[in-house]
Length: 389
Image (cartoon, rainbow, N blue to C red; front, side):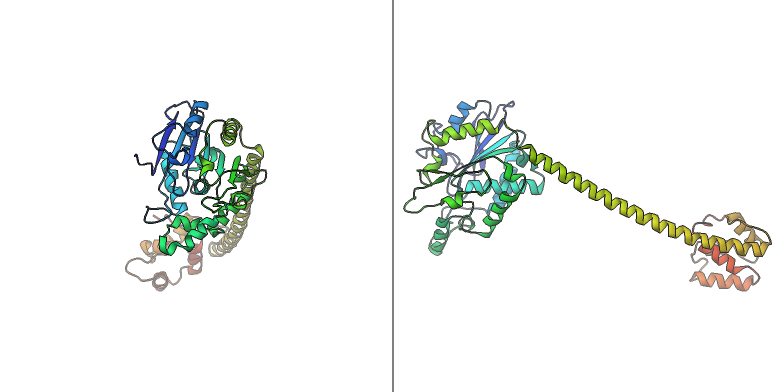
């Protein structure tokens, strides 16, 4: 018998490059890619409903996802749902799933896996196409709020050694509540068309998923009770069965009908609001910059006026501040070393001196008659004399 774990299996039409969409079957706890959907749980027989859908939709790729998800450790391994979701997104991407409209048909825990996948796809961004291309989900006895059966299995798990998947399926598990609330309230996810069926017969004396948990709680989505148990609900007997006829109709509608335009309009409105907010923030920063710049030029103007007044008193005539004037002042006092003067202007030590103040003091001693108040102001006047020869 072939191993149907951890891969995406081609059922029908998957090699057609011009196919108009993809349908992926996703099994649940303890299931596999073929036996879960076969009336006799056979793994080597194509006489089952995924293949029948391939006959009715020859221009659609029909796939079945296989992944290892065992209830007990002695039977095999299992990943936490969020890890399996990320792993599966990468697997689907390797088959270029997401280039076309996409529909999932899920059983039990498989529905929770798909919900986790779509959330991760949108959150991480890398697989966002898979989320945006999802046009419909079929839920067959998916425990959106958890399973009492899982709670019971966990209770006896000290003997049977349950896996993490059983723990995550426990009724009212916080992670499932969070996921359920997200899909109920999210504008995009709540718009995805859904077809929901639930069991009404017990499996070995236990109702695995009750009707309350099978209800995703999304407006307009009505869970349809079936006279079937948890195992039989996903094993469609023939093309005349109610579930097959309705799933076929659901595929026809979902592959051709776009999502409600209101979702796109709301997204555009939110985007425009975000743009407006960013523009407002930019305008506020601009105004603050203008105020700071105005204050800067005001202070600079005061320094300029004081300098020009001092220069006029020194020369006895109006003088504009420029490099030539400062060179004239320096040339008038040959005792001022030109290299040192340049260091003073640039506010940097020079010639082994430790500080700007030492340079000024040195030149004051060598040229006591120089207008040092003017020189110090000129040094303060930013950018005026950075290019002395």
